[in-house]
Length: 243
Ligand SMILES: [Fe+2]
Image (tube, rainbow, N blue to C red; front, top):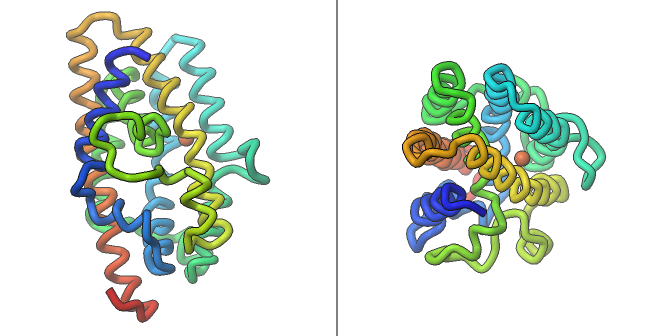
């Protein structure tokens, strides 16, 4: 794996998986029903953007291996994942219902203010940056579930969100577990995307620009976890959970 992918993984570990983790992510590893509901609610809003940003990568490139990768990624996310009956989206919806939300509430979900800011910026990246920068930004978000992060110095947890030994005894509902289990595919997704980005960005100047846009996307991930934390505070009251 090239140096750009390593640099990206080190950035993610330093920012999200060190001794001090963003609360919206930290709680993913000791969930309650209100947390599961908040995670699904905001993530559902994120999922509405994801295929459209991928669409802008496809529209912008003439590299067939990039297009193949993107179509394959979206097929698993949206239509069919080999490890489950439908695509990931259907699993996410039922994880929300099992956590106590109605499916209407989810399909009509409006992102929290922090998520709205993040989404706006991801759309902005997709519309204004090159396909290769967009690729690093969009698939960089999947890198937060990359199993390889555990090998990066400073990674502070015994597991990552897709790990069975973590999920099996956890308090997530059956679909909640399956939803997080599907993030195991993100190890492949993020790794392959980073390889393709490296392949088509041979100069260090290009890589620096790509890394900058990737960091911008990680700023958005910071907002994403803030939005989950804020939604959790709201649902905690609704579900009568103490802190
Ligand atoms: Fe993925």
